[in-house]
Image 1 (cartoon, rainbow, N blue to C red):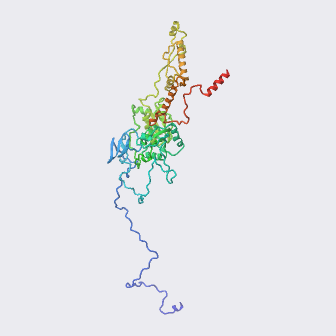
Image 2: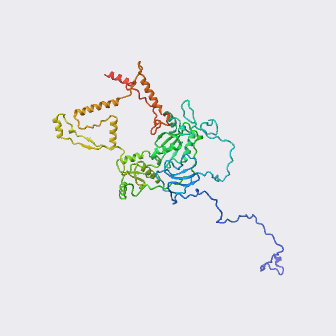
Image 3: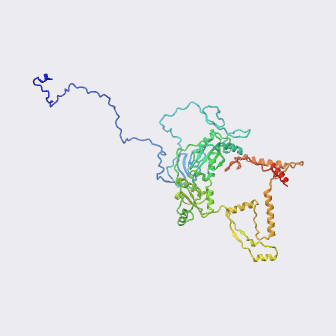
Length: 562
């Protein structure tokens, strides 16, 4: 550095040149390459692309259920697609398909009897069209298997030792010496009526089993028919558990179940129903129904609550509603309960009060409104309000008591009994006429009196003005009749030498014919057990009184005590 500083004309701290030297254009220098390659991105997409969307099925773009879509309809066909059409009729909205055994509905048992006045969605069939292509699932369709998978056949089930195959229930049960037969009609599939021991054998394993079909507020729906046949594939009896609104009218539910499925109800306890498929049932030849793809919106029906119901003015209706606010409810309904005795409770309550209230707190609004609509038809009654989650009903002007009219009973006083039959006694009785009071008994008491009179346990005296002797004769005569009816029993004729024992054989033959006379019918009334399940065997009632060993022991002890 000192050597460089001693050189002449050299300034180490001179300023930089004002104009830098220009690069020569004839010799370009290549730009250095970046250490990492720059990625190439596609051009940005446009925010509003103008492309044509594929036309979708109009049934997929339905109005929302809470929309204000209302289309008034009348009775008849409202939409059709060739042979497939939507019909408004007595059963509400129904769907007709070619070759169907009956008109399809979403719910068969919970359709109101009133005709709908409007629909909440366009009229489309909720079934897949016959020409519908396979919907896109994001994957290519599977290749068809080369194996021939046999259909389920109850008459020729797979062997029990075969792996990968579930158990298929065979037809039956059959009496000894009889075999299954192919049947087409309901009577042929059901076969002979079941005996009580067969019903017990079929029902007992299912009492504590949870393999069942649950029937809720929608009642017997269309897709439930195929579900019942799926249960019948594995078992001969299908257990159906009903809860909620349909249990108000269980007879209606059971009737629709038997009509649509073709089975037979062999046992019923509360809301649980046991449905028998038939002796000659074959799963391969079962009726196959199309599956309903969605739940159609319920149509609009007339209002249940009116300002001035039948036979009342608006002022009278307001008075009844005001009285109903302070009325105590007869019962409280639980959510998803069994209401089999509700109709009877309402009818009994109408015997004592023209207004009846039911507490429905905690229930869905549509549930207790449906219950009110059912009570309006079954009780019958007039609905007044659904305020405060309570059903208020009026029995109506045309209400009639369930019990017969109670006749006025004459109650003679004690002083009215004459002391003799002579003329002087009669004249004294005429002078002192007893005070006769008219008393009206309750309808329930009159029903008990009528049952007692029919069973010869009570006597109705038509002639009230009887003397002591005549009254005593009546009482003695009635006492003999009541003793005869109470201690009477069936006669047992023993065989003798003159051939009089044929009467016993005839009676036995008659009893056998009575027991097995209903086999030709589908199912006799004795074979159907509705409310009870009999575990006790029947006792022969032809044994005469005093013939049992216990009676002989009692007779011997009675003699020894004397």
